[in-house]
Length: 285
Picture: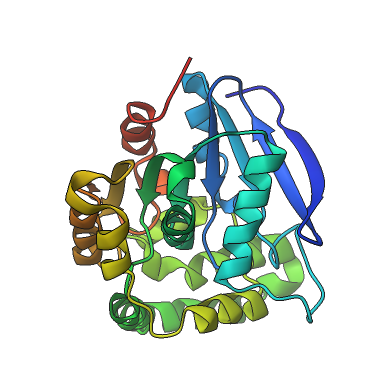
């Protein structure tokens, strides 16, 4: 694994953003999902990308993790894009290579549409879709998985076990794994994901700011006839985030999809294949 990361907090656009840098070489910005989550749950697997001779630049997006903001501070998609642009200036980068995971993939696309000349490469991993209709389908598929009887039985067994009193840390770990089981092809692998929390106000504010969104025509206008930035999409075949949506996005960006036999967290369920696919695409020394 790379050497110890460097952590800093920077003040930009009137908010304080937590940042983390690991590795040396060409910089790659990593955007976590949520909205309203934080970068930690991408670790330790994403850090393996730094072994290829590049620097990974993480940050907790405003309103989540170690970048909290007061309740009266706006946290919609436009503010999130503006923060990324401010960080680009802070890092003194002319153009960005971005790896966006889940909501972070959609944020990367929104940034590319607002600042097309500032994008060098885009890697979208398990990306949130570019239309509200596909996002609604994700919500339907995820809810169906979480309604499976075994999850309710497992939660009842956990409550009855008394672990919340005898081993609170183990209790929390199992409870978290059950809360995200629907994202995985193999739900038993959920215990391998680093636990995280989502700030509900931020999550709701971002989706409310997008409304009944459909970015397809904007993408076509911004990047006609194969002029999109060099892009790669990586998506799990068993992801409740519809792989059909990923294929549609890939076509809009004149690229294809690397399809893995995983759910929504390929960095957990297929770490080696995940790192290999991105390592061949991202810049390196």
